[in-house]
Image (tube, rainbow, N blue to C red; front, side):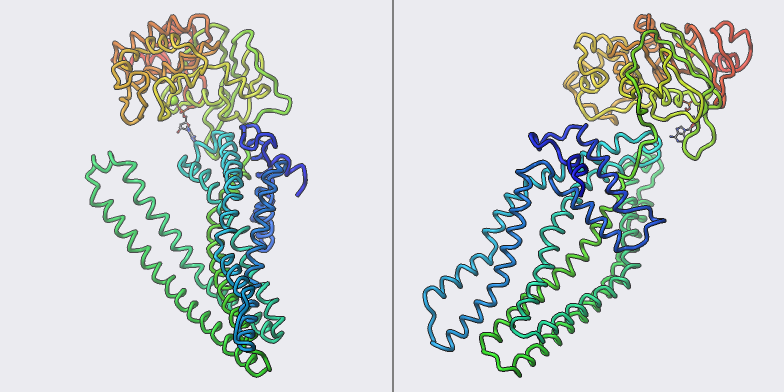
Length: 622
Ligand SMILES: Nc1ncnc2c1ncn2[C@@H]1O[C@H](COP(=O)(O)OP(=O)(O)O)[C@@H](O)[C@H]1O
Ligand SMILES: [Mg+2]
């Protein structure tokens, strides 16, 4: 593990709990590199052994708290606990054998013998080591969960529109949450599976001292046991895969109707959905039965292997001249050895499934955002808030071209309306302006600077927006509106709400501005107006309003329009709208059709052209 890698992986040694987004970002980058190495390119990387080895390496790098002495000591402490448990496992059978021999020889036990016996059995309960282990593990687990989850969260949030618009958001959030499971997998490997393997090995060594043949026999038993297990695992692969698939399907069959409860109600789909769920459950259990059959066979064969092994071991010991104590010690070792063997195999099989489940978590770190700051990106400082689109061409990943050579310009302080049929690419223009995507060709300039050459954060901090989609957090109205500008004064926020014609309505909510927004309980018009208020709260030089009055009644539109006129004075404003009352007074109207600018000019000029704009305008009026 390179020290550079380790240094980046760990949070600051002075504040181990302070995972800032910067450090998490770094964590993400390093984990990303490791994950890539860990899982490799499936085309190039086919050997399961190498994949396992790399996974373990990734795990170790993620686990080791570099630069944090206190947590490193915790790791050492945990290691000592593991060794102490192994030592007890080794000593107990030995002690049993000695006690039996002593009883047979002298018929009595000394106080020291009894004390030794009692202490060993007390330690064997694990009450001391498990208490120490828990106190050492808790801070480490805290560290791991934070590092993995924040790393994954930052990584996913830094991905661009192609990822977020092309994937189910609930899958992404589940993936981030699986960081928790990943840390449990680490604990299982380091504190369960690893020690169990040690147990198996140490018991073999102990048997070797009693009788080398018994040790050899046990090795043969262990190999057969694992071989049988492995063979059945291969046989069970298909039913297991099918089971996983059936379970996923069942989850979807439950999730979708619940999410689309309204659609189910409108179309009386309750019976249909209920039948689909019943069928999905039946299907899963049919597969489950098949899989169970394999497990029953496997258990029977494995049990036979252990019993045959034990009979042979007893025969070997009884034929050699061993004391009763040695025979008893062998028996104890054998039993204590079979348990870890069974456990190891069971744990490893569970672990295999869990690793397969958390595998997508490591894949998060393989993804790279398609939109990133250029190496020499500068901070955007707006002198003149001019915006210029020059020959911009864009298509969503794997889709037809949406913008085909779009060019238009907006001068500082101008209000420009972008109109056009649904699907003509208007909202896509907003996404490009905010760099949710980058265009395939052409350039977008603000204040004379290509937006690809400036830092994204500075670009976004210079533009205020009321996007087309009204998305809110389940937080208070105030928190949602101030999300656009956390420093904004309360009177500015109230002013923005008044301009958006939502102020008085918010005051009527049960807790006024403290009411928690539940998107489903807001009417379309209310959501639209809160969305406008959020866009108007920061006083930025550039303002983008995407369909701001969509779905509002005429009286509200007139109110909002009046206030927007005041609010947009001196600001470069882009209004995307179908609403002629909103676009009519714009300094310029850009008409988009199928991703091309087909007309440009003020309202009267465009009407006189009798082209696209004229047709849209008159169609609406008629
Ligand atoms: N994330 C996306 N992935 C693929 N296609 C998209 C995506 N977003 C929008 N589109 C498609 O791009 C076209 C333009 O969309 P948009 O810019 O939203 O149109 P509008 O002019 O109505 O605002 C539409 O055909 C739409 O289906
Ligand atoms: Mg749109």
